[in-house]
Image (tube, rainbow, N blue to C red; front, side, top):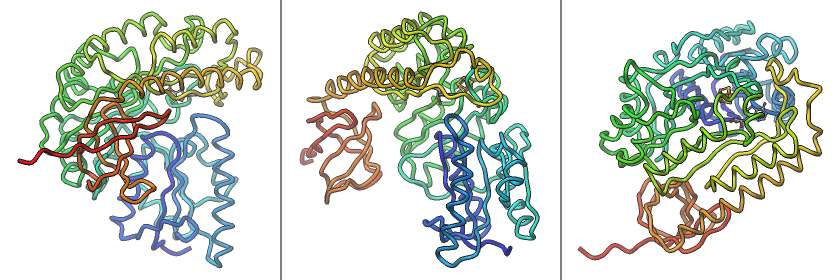
Length: 440
Ligand code: 5AD
Ligand code: SF4
């Protein structure tokens, strides 16, 4: 195999993987490789994988097969294939044995990708799944041009050990990046074009540097000229400090949106999940958040069909949904993850048809609240950050402060902040009319 000249990075799963994928692309570009939009035409394909749910591992193996077939159909040599992300961490050498890929690199080791690729080019399949604490960030090239919205990983890993979740095993223990490094990277992102930054972490609100909590970082970013909006995700209820809640009341650039997963509405299920919060303690946190920022859009994650979940316990999830009136949510059927405690509870597994029915009912309930939240904005005006072109000529799509997609006809360009009258609401988006600026 020769040194690759072109690369393609394909990321699956969470926003942290999207961030890692961008940083790997920057690394490859810094090595002089050219990006290829078509994975079948690239010399090096990085599959940045996710292991959180469903048959993640099997999907990776079929994707490897597809890539080799795609290259053969184009009459090209087999591409060099690098498996990154959480499947790489979980499977390790097994992927090299089974699929003969060239590189396997874990989420904490991808700064070593250039060396691993160079070794693979000499015919040496190479693997690095070490988990040094946050070493990689110091070894990555500077941020390049970005769009109006950018991700910034501030914290990685998880110490919570929810019994269904693979993250503590694939991403390791909670580690925070330093305050100074983050402020520097945020400024670099703004210089590269970002107007909105979303702070990322598996437990982003557990971020700390000495005495400083996430609210201190948010307050520092609030002072960065040119940055207009700050968001953060994903938070854990137990790390939702009063200081961070208060930031929602007084930090102007912090957007009125909170993603705070609860997973289930029954205390027995929450305990079996090792969530370390109760239904009531979660609801009381939301009371304080709403007291600080009455218009906040609330979001969450749910798992239905956790081992042993009864019909009555599932009803408690539904009643919690009606109590909170979420603006939007993610919901999933429980999927056993090898190596996690819940995967051992095989006697209590819920039949798939029961779990599917629960998921449908939950999603129907979530949709009614999402629609109601969207309709409540109609007749108001708000700022919209334009992110991309729409399907029709002259149509642009941006985001409201509450993270809704807003469609509008405008001459405004990507990256502009526009004041918009909201005139219609669908389940997944709003329609708006740009306000005409009064003549000066
Ligand atoms: N099965 C189903 N959903 C899961 N999640 C995490 N692990 C599992 C699993 N084993 C969901 C949780 C989490 C989100 C990122 O993915 O809801 O908050
Ligand atoms: Fe997984 Fe729970 Fe950690 Fe979230 S808090 S990453 S669900 S173990």
